[in-house]
Image (cartoon, rainbow, N blue to C red; front, side):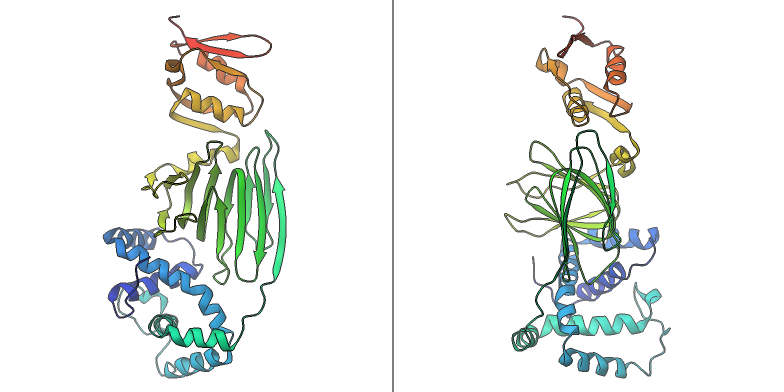
Length: 347
């Protein structure tokens, strides 16, 4: 990650955006569009925002110390003569001057004088991390399950999935070793919400997002609402910032790719018992149905596996899918008790 110059306008804007994201305000599509435009205007903006968000954990440690308490009290005292609703120039006038000035002052202090933070952390050891909850949830083939976690976040597990929850007083971490899950994250700026899957970490910022760890080792991340950041834990680099409607396919050992725009509601239609395919390869469609039930399917040649399929289907009713496939024309179907054989109809 590139260093952030605390005296730059970029840093000021990033600090303001970080405050807004962590404030837990209701979803505002206008402000969201402004943020996306700001991030797209320059690649350094995402780095600056990431730096401000990463300071949150350090701020929490600093805020608990007597030294920091005295400093914050001094800053607040200096603002007593400023009306709380006084206009503040720039994008964040709607937030009011007082919270922006206070947070920006502390952020600036940490960015400009890191040696003070280091000195503080050395002289005042941090309290040991306390495990608040450690548990695991899983679903069998064809099952779905929704769980409300101890922080109020909701996770919906798709078929054949497993998550391992490890919440502490510093962070909320979930491992997704297999399968797919939709996370609807409860706001808690003091504890980042991180999902680890396929060698990547996906960090949520008050959001809803879907993570799918496929059998080929690739991880699909789809953002339904808000913003997430994905980073490679094996080859660390600047994180990829994803917004609502973005989807990215993460492959181990490859550079972070650019996000693709998708219909996020269709991507998580599985939650309501639907599989939606839009020009999917037949081989990939069959692989999806295999996740929900035992299917022995053979492709007679590579061409039939590449046929494009579109439609909406019940994942637990593969018979209806193959009946519809039989009407497509290019695909022929042979069935017996043990397997289904797909071939091009001109064979």
